[in-house]
Amino acid sequence: MNALEPFSRPLRRHWNPPEMSRPPMLDPSAPANPAEPRYALLINPFYPKDPNASFGKHALTPTLALTSFAAATPEHWRVRYWDENLIDGRPPFQPMPELVGITVHLTFARRAFELADWYRRRGSKVIMGGLHVLSCPEECAPHADALALGDGVQLWPRILADVESDRLQRRYAATYENDYRDDPAPRRSILPRKSFLTTSSLIATRGCHNRCGFCYLATEGLRMPYRMRDPAQIAAEFEADGQPYGVFIDNNLGSRRDYLRALCAALRPLQKIWSAAVTIDVTDDPGLIRDMALAGCTGVFVGFESLTDENLADAHKKTPKTGDYARRVRMLHECGIQVNGSFVLGFDHDRKDVFARTAAWVEENRLECSTFHILTPYPATPLFRQMEAQGRLLHRDWSLYDTAHAVFQPKHMSPEELEQGYGWMYQRLFSHRSIWRRRPEDWRAVAPYLAMSYLYKRSNRFWHLLIKHDLVHTVWRPLVELTRIRHLRFRQRFAERSELKAAPANVVAAGV
Ligand code: B12
Ligand code: SF4
Image 1 (tube, rainbow, N blue to C red):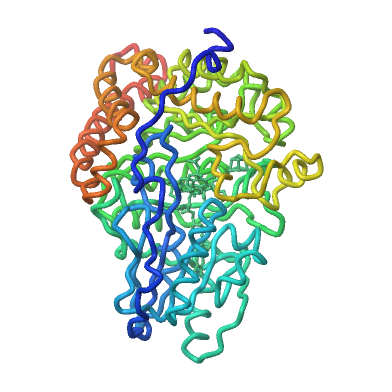
Image 2: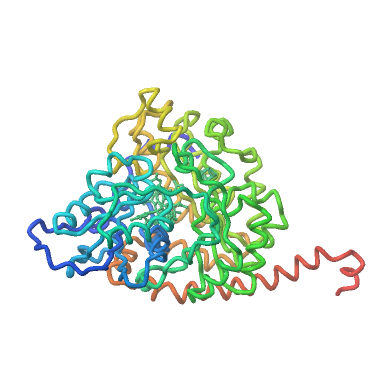
């Protein structure tokens, strides 16, 4: 592959309907309707979708930010969930909620502030929480009646009680150091089930054994020790939600191997399928990935971040050498686990050949899916402080801190070249040629892989339609069910093979 191919011709323009790039208008003349006491509206604000990537990922599974603390709401409060990314128009205001809870990330902070100002002008009280509130509280404070810094599950009931007694404070703070097993299960009953491929977003652990300098876990003031819930609790939640497929949204489900092994033992009897984010060192223990496969794991999201060891050392990521990544990917594939590789572009040792080199590696190692991110210094992280000290930040327009834009001066290329290379990566990996090259070696898995790849990666018009008309779940459910059935067959063969391997030689020879 020509190392400079990404720069040889302009990128194709992507189809991007207004609903995926702009939030709905908030009518400035809308009246302040009568407020319903003890009614809380919880909002996940709109963010613009990157048309380079699949629109599908936004309807895959819901964030747990709102459902997690909604579970701690006392019974005499009514709670409604509103996700602006499901493109159902303006958030509800008839009746006016007494309280509006908004989760804030840096990329959609501006929209969160717009919503907050709009509701407050009409008499609702607004509470803001989430990552951006923790990293930039001063910026959020003027738009909220109260800020929730840290764990919402502990804070939400306190906030509601203070609203009831008219003693709302400006700030509430909680750490993440409580016993995670005491948390209630997320309140999934408030989710619009038809709008997501699966409502089973699961979380079993918090934190990560790493603290990479670019990760939000390294945010100043955020203490998040690795905390785990009981495997039986997780299995019961998964069972209760009635979905065939679950997505673990844990930062790193593989941080504690003994825990992951116990979780797999609890999940195996469910006969369901799931995927999770893990670091590649999970393959240090071949028995563990075998257990994952037998418990229903069909895919892992792996933060490889970079194929250059120096970049990983700069980021303080404890990880095996990149030269060993290919072997480890093969180990996962042999267990029937698909690999979605996540790569960060624009590190200080990345030169212009990084795009073509990474794409070639992804194809050579047949990664079924890949996700690319432009290196982004999140406020209050070590990377942000470093870029700031070096005078390399280009601006502080947080809406562009979405990992699809270059917001800093890279070392060995221009910001425009970094963005061009990023766009090229998606164009390349979503091409017919690349999809075909990465097909699984097992012929039985090729047809489903192609179907999923085309539906996921090359169908943004279709996704838009499904999201708009609340058809995501209805259309995907049969495909997901088919995948589950295929997986159960695979699992049967895999279990027999593994048991055969584990058996003493004389038993194998006897054909038992
Ligand atoms: C699910 C998820 C998604 C989903 C849904 C996102 C959505 N907003 O709807 C999808 C796949 C679509 C997605 C997309 C992206 N995501 Co995302 N995503 C996540 C993930 C894996 C889980 C979020 C979650 O449910 N967390 C669990 C909840 C319980 O934790 P929490 O949000 O912190 O909420 C707690 C408290 O903060 C507080 N709280 C939160 N809100 C509120 C509100 C109130 C009122 C109160 C009282 C309390 C409160 O209470 C909660 C319980 O303690 C996180 C990583 C992670 N594990 O957290 C990344 C993460 C949030 N995503 C991230 C990014 C960068 C993106 C993308 C920009 C990446 C990309 N290029 O595609 C896109 C675009 C989205 C965007 N612009 O924000 C970053 C954000 C970094 C930052 N500093 O803002 C994270 C942290 C991943 C990472 N390691 O970098 N994402
Ligand atoms: S390994 Fe992943 S989740 Fe853990 S600190 Fe690094 S980037 Fe964050």
